[in-house]
Amino acid sequence: IPSLAAAGWHISDIAVCLWRPDISPARLVPSQKRFYDPRMYSRGLVVCSEVLYNLRGSYKSTLVQHWLEYHKLIGVDHFVLYDRDGSLHEIGVLEPYLQSGFVTYFPRFSGWALSSQHDHVHAGPGFPSHAAPDAHAASHCLFSQRGLAEWVAFLHSPDEYLSSSKGLRDIHEELLVPLRPLRRQGLAALDVTAIYFTRSSQSGPPRGPVRPSPWLFGRYVWRASTPIELQNWGSSVAGFLNRFGSPIVAPERVSDLVSAHYPRPSADMLYLDNVPMDFVRANHYGEAFHVRQIIEPNDVPVKDESILWAEEEMSHLGLSPLPP
Image 1 (cartoon, one colour):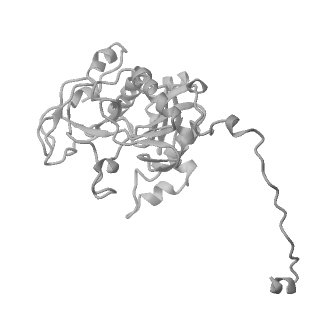
Image 2 (image 1 turned 90 degrees about the horizontal axis):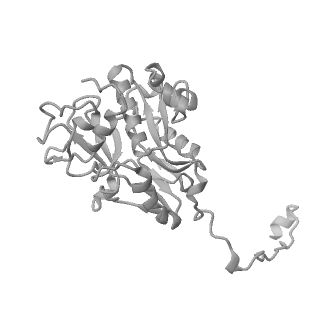
Image 3 (image 1 turned 30 degrees about the vertical axis):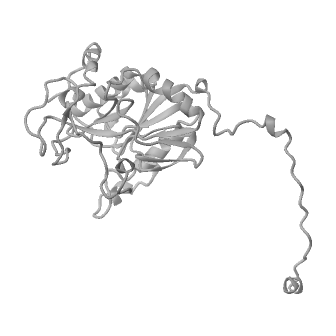
């Protein structure tokens, strides 16, 4: 201190003002993080997509239409869709949903939200390509729904359907209502398991025809016996911590996302891991865009027709069947 004074510093005591609460502890209001009233939200569940691309052609436009209609049928209130190439606009399938307010659409997201050179750079060797802007879109969607949506679900593309092993029919009654007591206790996020569906009971590369159906979800009724997990990702003991899922989150209580698969709630919030598939899951129809092996070689697929109740309901909507 003497050296500071010699250098011209003015040394003096710091005045400290003792703080007293304006109200007694018994009357302190709960933390705003715990405050929750479902009536404050105009939307119950909003679905956010990844940054989609190359959705041109009758097959893909029908795929998008069926995806939206199925989720409208079970009670999703709104979709927020992103693409990087404007292809969702080009196919024209979104127009009625935009006019009705069911869909919000951000075309060419990476070009205007990130960089005009973003897609060019990430097309080069050594860079992830199609998935590169997904984390940014997920954060954008999450924050855009604060104060509007009670919950946000991340369904990455039109090959993922919210369902359950019982056949989810009413999101509000079967999902949102049961979650509300937990939300009042601080629930911020659910780990929604994603599980692959394929065409036959055979393990290894897909063989044979798909089940005859005008709907994607009706064509693939054999699923993996275990959820999608990333090997060597995190835990070597608790595999459910490595699951590549489609989380459902409370927008006000999550401020960070590792891609769209791993939300990070505030430290004092609750996170539900290993959510039972008879409550909610994401059916991932991994052969929707091309035939590929999605079932582990040592796995034995399980027949699962729990979503087929929707075939008859969808047939009343006057939609074109999904092309072969």
